[in-house]
Image 1: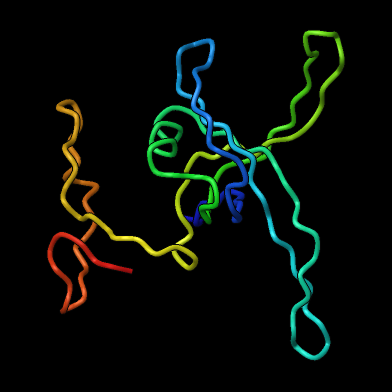
Image 2: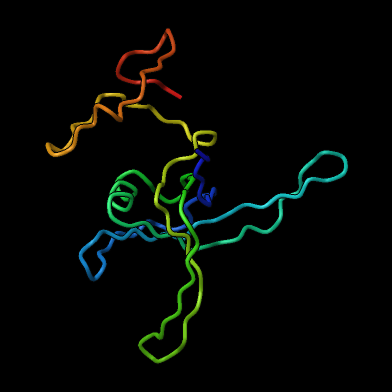
Length: 149
């Protein structure tokens, strides 16, 4: 079976994440994100180019968890897809653009310091999480509850 992949975005959160609800009542998280660009020079050094800014949205559980855990300035990685949109605003002006729709969203481990809580989550009663439990891997010096990265 082939490995399934999706487009990804890595960058930083450039605005305060805003939580709202959709017309159907689902959680919706919106944030402006920045992407730093670099060019490698012939001598091996890098030159920073202009940073670009984009719209990122997440829905349902990704939106709720993202709102709890993410803040302006955080370095993130998101998995999802790009969606183009078109609508007319209140004055009748045509608005067009694109946004990254994040299905999975979290901190960039290479650029963020944090602790990992490996305490098992409680599963909803109708779902058996036993089949989805990953093997436990801990460095020999780590405490059972947390690993500092």
